[in-house]
Image: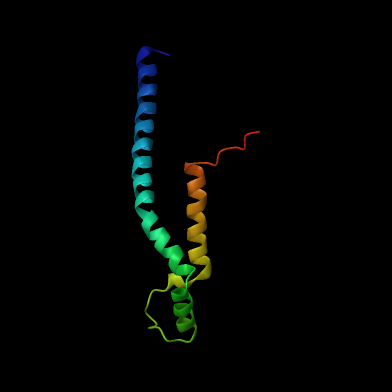
Length: 98
C-alpha cells in the first residue's frame, strides 16, 4: 500500500469516526431533552388521570379524530421500557464486587 492509499484509507476512517461522534452528540442531546417528558409520561401513565382518560375512551366519550396513542397500554409501556434499555446501554450497571 502506498502512502497516498494509506492516508486516504485512514482519512475515510477519521471522517466516519467524526460523523459518528456528531450523530451521537445530537442523539444524546435529544435523549437528555426527552427526560422531562419521560418522567411526566410515566407519572401520567401510572396515575389516576390515565385511567380516567382510558375509561373515557373505552366509553366512546372522546372525539374520534383525537390522536390517542398515549392510551395504548403497550405503546406507553414499550416507550418507557425502551428508555430503560437505552439508559443501560449509555451507563451500564456496575458489576458486583466481591
